[in-house]
Length: 457
Image 1 (tube, rainbow, N blue to C red):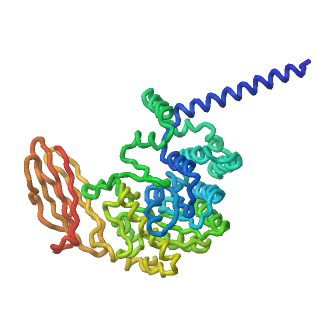
Image 2 (image 1 turned 180 degrees about the vertical axis):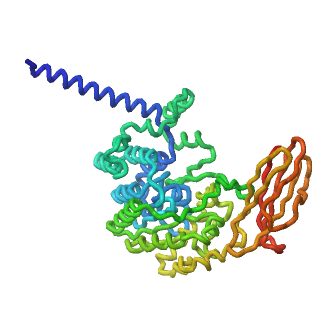
Image 3 (image 1 turned 30 degrees about the vertical axis):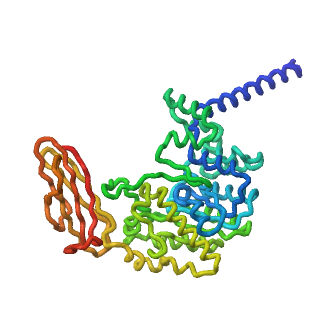
């Protein structure tokens, strides 16, 4: 017959085993989970500026994290801003941020900065786990439970194994199993109490600029563009789930008495010109209608009049995100928009409407981008040129080369409508290929674009 002591011993053993499993999980998390992510940096810096008043909150994914500089907004609008955007931040994440920050600060403005991908792609589970941990590190017990519930009970994960995957973060956010990677991760965790230092050590191009804002100090290469890296925003439909989550975020803002400002992040010129023959304008107009219906103001900075704001090619770190300088220019424009709007000025006049899509596109150059692909053969290099240009614009191409040891380019084939050319080669060497694209017969720089590439043969 089992005694009370027997049951007690078994209960103690079960509890001891549970505690051992938890301890082992914690150790593996500390050892294997990457220390010093951009998300961790953002939340660490927010938690360590508790005495500062915040009246303007920025939320969103990397479009906002890299693109919106609170310093520049504050300079223009006299606000006190903080950017709590993080990598692949979901709308439920943003909603929980709004609720948390509102408890500690008297918010007056909420800026939601997004791109089309924010509504077209499902959430990234590993990023959600990183967000959960970074936010929960300084939250109250009740908020931690809410954070866990947001992830664990999400219809995309519950009741699958992902509803409990957050318990084992190192299985999704591991630095790897190489000894050097693990050792480096442990050393940084022990010697760098500020995760900002760990992030800087792992990525020298990344910069933390304060007030939650980070960006990359590099530039999108449009002189030698790789066609595989030239992202064009899709005109695919928005996911029903993300639309509902977006609406929930907007409604949360209005419930606390704030009309959120929805901002669509800018893209390079060529990405906009590429949408001449797609249904992109109709797609974005539907998003605007949803935002306005739920109490938000809406501004697509791709529709800004050029005399108010238009990004430079040099403003982008890649095909979708602004770099350090680009984020400052963009954010000064946001600050001006806020200041003028709150002064009662007609800020709508600063933007085209989606109904004026064709007029808006006509404000761009005839040729937005020239690029090419090439393949080295035994006796020739097959070059195929392309460009992104205004519709109904006739384009012609010229192929030029500069061989190793030469100082100048030579015309290999003069301007013609044929976009392909086989460059003869002999032996082994290297060559720089330059392709010029222009409106047929034009001699002005405004009607011309070029690209160049180095290759060995």
